[in-house]
Image (cartoon, rainbow, N blue to C red):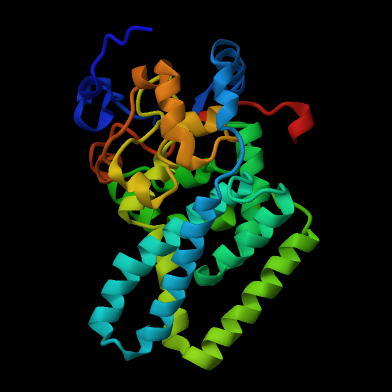
Length: 336
């Protein structure tokens, strides 16, 4: 395939001609077609069967994630000795970055992309990766994230979608900025409030492990150490450079509902920026997504981002996108 459009033109971050001219005011973008990734996956497998060689797991990602946990816990242990100015800076810049990276490690683990053996070893490792975050989210995230992949855009099934009240309340520029600050609460509470699923033994185990660890930190290292971890989780998933990936399904270009990011922050996020590639082939570990992109020329023809900070800036300031810029579909009966 010959690519006739250069990367500089395809980069939405620096090309306003590609962007939406105005945002919807009162409703989402409703479509009747199926989500694009499943059909595209089969088409690509027919044309590029060698993609299957990339399937599986990458234990090097587990090693990186484990080292991140150890570093984060060492910093939490050290944090009571810091001045409050240094403490707050570290909470945002370091704890926020490391905990956001761990969240995306948990994302990889939800696809069993770290360890051999399938669901159980990856889920147990996710409990370990969860420890520095303060909130037990690994098991619950996995359940709702599988629905996001199997039913992208399905109203009241895909809990990655904002609800209508959310989109209306935070429609203004200031509202969108506030929404970004509150993003960890919406991301964490929206699924369990709008589509509560029966609690599983894995979720109870996750909470038991997490609360036992939290009690240990509070009693042995002190409340400041616990605050370092919790603030890192909240600040790192709010207005933070890594949070640009939360807008990866915002329809910035009319007709395209998933966007990839190819900037250097992928080094901290298990290549979650390669998001079209990930949704097409979730069985491919994040470390191998660049190889997948190189294997299938189609991905280089799609509008993409190279700057997550610019994505956040444009979302707040430009006014041509808002939370209504999400593609929704009426759910199939068997997904309700």
